Amino acid sequence: MTTSFNIECEDCQKKYRIRYGLGNNFPQLASFQCYDCSKQIETGYTSRGEDRVLKGAYVTSEEDPFNPEIEIVNLHPEIPTRKGKENDPYHFQTFDVFDNLNKSKANFDEFKEEQIVWSKFNRKWEELKMPLRILSFKGEDKMKSISKINYRDFTKLFNEWMMIFIRGKLSSDYDDICDEYNSINSQKIKEYVKSNDKFLKQINEFCNVYMKHHHHFQSTIFHLKYGWEITDEMIANINWDEIHKVYGDLYEIIGDLFVIPTMINNLANGREFDEFQTDGFTLTKYLKTDKSGRANNFDTNSNLSHLSSAYESGLRNGTHHKNSYLDTETFEVSLGTSKGGTIEKKIPIIEYISKCNQLFGMGIILSSLILEMNK
Image (cartoon, rainbow, N blue to C red; front, side):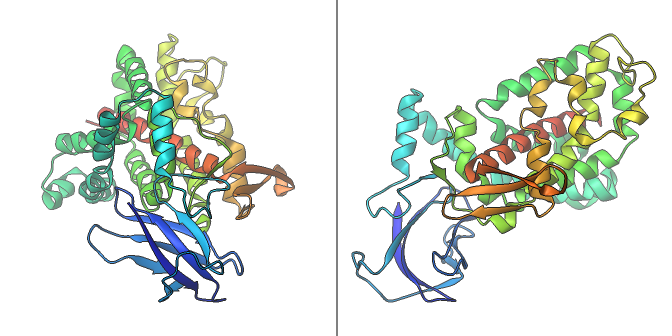
């Protein structure tokens, strides 16, 4: 369903007619910058049944949808808008979903079921986040006392939440990673995990970094699940200031968690879990290496290499040191890469969102494995 309403920018009073495509998940918010003064304008719904949120602008009484002085802006919190269609009064983003379903020969009824399942993701997180936080900082006994959930039931809840995200194409990656771990089933790795409570804190931080702003990452979720093509012609209605550091934060944490697949790969190659191919290279030395090379140890292992498929140091560096900005006319992110950010690289904003989703998916798969080891 698409609703229309007229607004004026709070700062410069430029008028817009918003055509807002209602999503299935809550909270849902879509954002754009005022075409004249670059004021961030955001609208949507924080929960089902509540009044519409509007920030950076106010609703006007203008009723004429065809007034040529009022610029159309198409917004959708969960579906990309095609370039050139962002101001088209007759465009509906859902048409592109139907086109993708047709190209991939996907069943529409099954897609509707996937939408229903996906709508449970945030609700499941609301059940999970408190016990995860308590477990991370206060331990299992305190979690059980306050949340009324034991560790085994907690891991079951985490896995249910994770499986909602990875349903589709990522589920085969999960199977491969689990197969590799089950083939070695090392008690020594389990003991290492249990002796390092930092892993639980890192998992908690990793999940919260993404979930704090997860409504901004909705637009490519089904592209990830179905393997639909993501092109430069797609626009996402997001607030760049809120998400520009998300990829880098995820990168930093998963880079630390990569010690686990590194250990698994050591064992899979007939070595001890902390023994590397290079003589004299120890686990202590590995943990001191630059994170850009943390996945090198397992990148030729076909079952584990999925974990680093979206792990890019250039993207991390270009967004994490205030070396980036979003061009709202081209919908490209300019990244300051190389030492000092002197070399500029541009990527579509939709690619950034897609990379964040991919990295998060791999991170919660790895987190699930670590939680299993910690039993």
